[in-house]
Image (cartoon, rainbow, N blue to C red):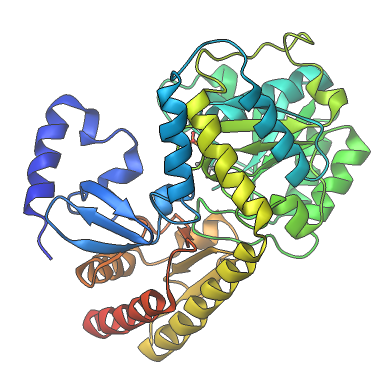
Length: 428
Ligand SMILES: *Cc1c(COP(=O)(O)O)cnc(C)c1O
């Protein structure tokens, strides 16, 4: 496959957009080469500027769970656009989608809509701090909660010290309020809480992680967090920007059977338009402005086009829960097929999968960021480019989950497994 036109477009873009992209992971830094410029997409397929057709495993990083340009969503957006694209005034549509979310997600009474997952997580943490009157948060290395300052923190020296900024522009002052633990390490969380007694407002995590590849919580981890939060008056925040409406209609709370105090959403909730949201029970949500003192706002929040797309998507997911069975079966089929070809390849590998999230690491066992980082990145690069040459578009980083969409056919999955076999054979 040729990518001449994409490379030309990338050079042009880089003159006027930093790094040529509006979000870093798009730039192929982790795998090398130039990013592919898309013209359009339909169902399970991407079409690029060089005339290639690719089977898509990123689904816009999650939102397109029913496939691209899904007709009911497209029609809903078209219809709404005719009526005006933004008012800065309330619409009945916002209540309708809020009711839909509250009906689908366990343990929430109210939801506030924002424009991205970043905003949702940032606002959820402010709300948790405002509600508890405490400043510190605990997050896990390798979990991504968007690009707001509190989350761009890396582990400091020693497990029980403060974090330090991992991007210039994040202040030490902010970093000292974010404590870092290893994913799946409940004992470390308890140590942090002990060392910061009475100061921790919230623990935030991806209940199934997707931002270090796909990593599952081990038995008892999330349950243990719930327990320690209850004991210490700490709020448990599930960042369900990836898992919400993807693992099941109620998200990870439903799938894992553990209640969160605040839940954040993004990706699927907008049906492919820019939407985020955070939700909780009344006692917590009523702390939010204008009802309560915790400030949060947005000119385009609850935008009618975005709400129309999101509502149409959520209604379909609520009406047809069999979609989740279908996605699960397809993903397991892919996993089993990949297991076979990887096992035969002789490479070290680990395939993690939950629902329609799956990823391959080129190392034996992955359960946190440190073990994910042991993956052989040169092998991943070769695998990524080999798959691309076969017409399969995987996330251009070993630290990202693949997302299946329900438009994928079993023939697409067979072609993907076959492409993996061919690619692995060439990598020898
Ligand atoms: C994508 C993502 C975010 C950030 O969402 P944006 O819409 O990119 O700001 C936050 N948390 C998780 C778990 C994500 O996967």
